[in-house]
Length: 137
Image (tube, rainbow, N blue to C red):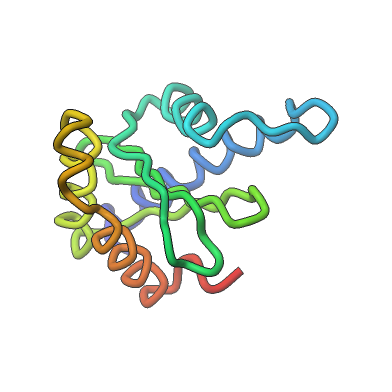
């Protein structure tokens, strides 16, 4: 296994551990908002949130976010229609889509309202599924 693939796998494992710890802290089944959970996982794993977007039009996934770790890699977190979170590390062939969504997320609200990100989010999710991540829940 190439060193880069090993580090990418470790990224997803660390994020999954942080998300699992959060689930243990849920009181009476109440979940914190997706954006708070992603931000907490990023903080606990020394990453930074690249984007957090709604995924409209998918029958399984309602939200998707990315946590970046510089040269180490990127973790994508998705939330299904029932609030369950899943995580995967991504590779270079999705880097442009991740960068495009990160740029959209960082843009002013006026720009976000003008530029539609949904197509990019759906394409990224499709690429992840075709590489074996986030098969239909």
